[in-house]
Image (cartoon, rainbow, N blue to C red):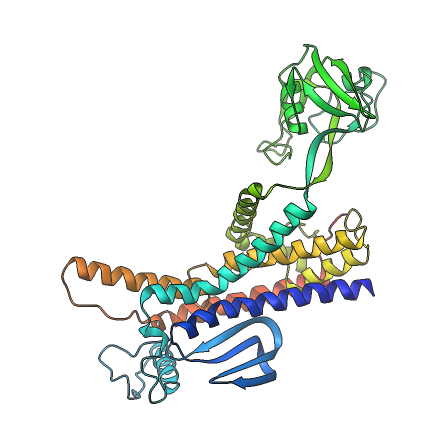
Length: 448
């Protein structure tokens, strides 16, 4: 039952996100006087609909997106009478563009000539087309702000999480400690009497709050004693530890071992005491939210940029026997499966209490909204970013014409980009089908 509730929770969150995305387009479009004939959540056959005024609101059978239908999305071809249907030209692409223009013109009823989308000023076109992605960004910001400030995020504090028994001198082949050998020296932290649960208050005379601050001092003091102030069971006491100068794996900014061109772990000679920090959920101040959200947007953009490369790995995992990369993209099927497994406690290290499960799933919905925000800004039709690019190009052409004292060049004919739109749509359909298939036959394993 918990599995089903977890899936339904995220499904409702995704549906609400899609609905709000389309409201982000709908409200400014109506505010600027554009006639909107349809507001639909989903694609395919209509399941339910109701007319309110001039707009039909409804749900469709395939909940993988949504749309609003605005009249006059495409301007008439230059030289054509906008009140007359034009005979189709020859050529497959030309016929397709002419058909799109005709369909757009047929929606315009008498009295609606000035309520078409293509006649909006550039700034209003931008507001309408950016309204959807902006709504997704706002949803993510609200959810993440609540999670960061009211619940907190896992942060490596200055509290000791583990103390190794020994220092292994051969560390270039593995980033994880194994069983101690008789020849391995006792770890300096163990020798100094440090224990898991101790909180390091100060090191080398400086106050510290994160283990990264502790680690930075230790790595630069190989062979030299370092004075610590440690809090244990509410009592503070001085401890002196002498880091051992040894070869340790070099790590990057994410804490992952750095490897050379042959795949061998790169080492460096640094101070080492054989202890690690612990992760604790720490509430963040409101002032930290912009930086955290900005970092999340940057990470999402990085994933989107690497999407073609990632899809190759997804295809190999789907049709081969190799493991699925835990960082590969997922379809809504995969997201629902993860949400259900976390809710039912099937994934170790996640969940626990009902509150933890809700926080995890709210974070999942926030991540999906960030992905929708970034992905929809790609400047290709049929994505919102494609219409934004068309509006910006229209504004640029007019600005150049004004600067050169030339006539107004008119509206940008977005219909000319329809071949690109159909190509992009085909790619998106193939990607979606591949991700769904991969999530069924070789799903991502989270938490081992």
